[in-house]
Image 1 (cartoon, each protein chain N blue to C red):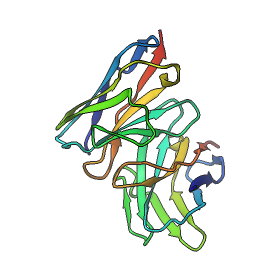
Image 2 (cartoon, rainbow over the protein chains, first blue to last red):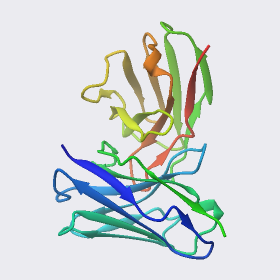
Image 3 (tube, helix red, strand yellow):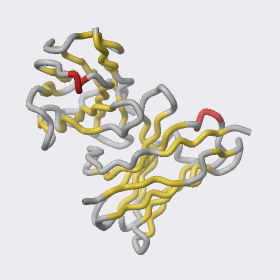
Image 4 (cartoon, rainbow over the protein chains, first blue to last red):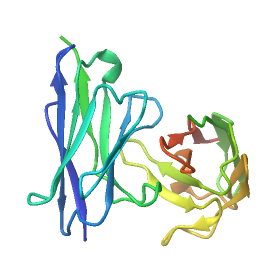
Length: 117
Length: 107
């Protein structure tokens, strides 16, 4: 059974770069698309972007200038980098398998990242 | 971007009630719509895709309908496990976007 786990620092300072890793276990990353989604505390869901196992990416225009998503198929990992963070980037960040736009999963349990000095 | 608007934002209901949540898209999305259920501290779970298709393993009391710009999620007889927040999401094109959510609470 495929499982997904997000990991990374829980606290990032303003203006720095948020870096998270999504590790897929029990199966392979390949031939799927993988999306990052975030959810500020008590608020709704925002799609950040996706990556195809071959490296093709698509980002939300609202974040495009600050986002980089990459994949390491040898490690079965997807990475997210978000630069120049502000407190508005405080959120639970999720990784999920994206099947034609339906985030059918599996989803990770999410990781809370707080942006604060 | 396509904007998704859900109503109501909060819905109070009792076990056994039939409830309906509405989702409107700011432009035509055919039937490229999914519904998710999210419980506190958990990731969302897909219930419905392509507007009316029940995801495998989801109870048949959940149903979806609509096309174009107006969609509904109906729960035919609320069960205790159904009290959660529900989101619609279009996937007509990227960026995919979500409605703001409907919190279904116990009356």
